[in-house]
Length: 417
Image 1 (cartoon, rainbow, N blue to C red):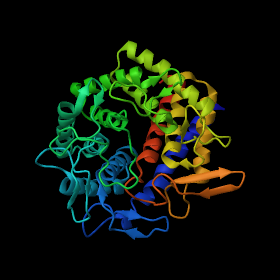
Image 2 (cartoon, one colour; image 1 turned 120 degrees about the vertical axis):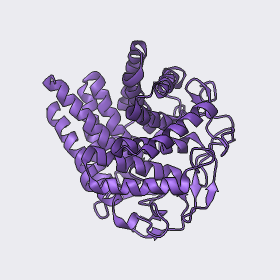
Image 3 (cartoon, rainbow, N blue to C red; image 1 turned 180 degrees about the vertical axis):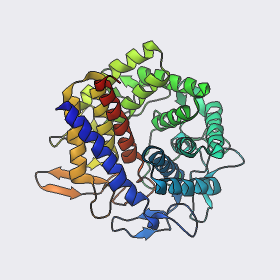
């Protein structure tokens, strides 16, 4: 029975990538033929709004998704789109004077925001590393390594800890630095969010290069996750901390618990010492066990988040957290062989297939509610848009790639190969 579920998940993930996600994201209407790159916004009704600013986060994520889809699935159209997006990244975003990239530009290429938050710069590194892995473009590798050097020499203030935002010249800046992105979250003064996207970027860079400087940075990030980011009282990771790792506030993001857990477990297996591997294994089992026990609704869908003190949770469900839950539950099964994790993984995947997949236009809806009143698409994180500065194929395509790799590994383990 478990083997049948693993095989179903493998086929479902590849089908999602080939027949649902990338057919939408490779649609020619997404290409801005006048200015280059990808159009600024597409509404739920498939109307183009090209007045929207262009963001580094979206551009780097698109480069990652297209590059990885070409490398793993052999989709030639994704190689073409990756090349198209990389040219845009170099022409409009890359800062030739100070390194790194601008956060936000107009369609015409005028810089709107030149701050350099690690959240956004991470996707410059991740996209370029993935593009290099896919097509061996040396310019992409050079840009990624240059950005890595800037971040490590300018923004790192302690092992595994980085300032959230920097100026164009790589001096410490206030705030989180999301550029001109609409509805950017606000954080208390001095707050730090663990840079899990930077960690993801370093994983991609290390896998592309084997560079030991990147390995060292990843090892330090892993130490920070193990302690002080892990909160043993609540069996989760602190969503927001101060510079020393103390929790700020009581809001908890369940999607980030999922994402950080399987990411840190991957880092442990890539560069961890035996002691780190064992500690991270125990922490992963604790966090994912808590998610399994408490963070899904009665329909099998991951709750977005809630308050640790009041217990109040959000009613709507957001697409990216749903994707992260699939990977995390599969990781839990890998770690424990507890069939409850595999059942939760399958149930979440089937929920996505039933309620999030947009069968009219492709890809997924952003936010839905399913309750006793039925199913409905609702407003929430990233609004209703099919494409905007925060909505792209990063999380759900990454889920597909992760599930494909992890199910292949599980089947190989079962067969003894």
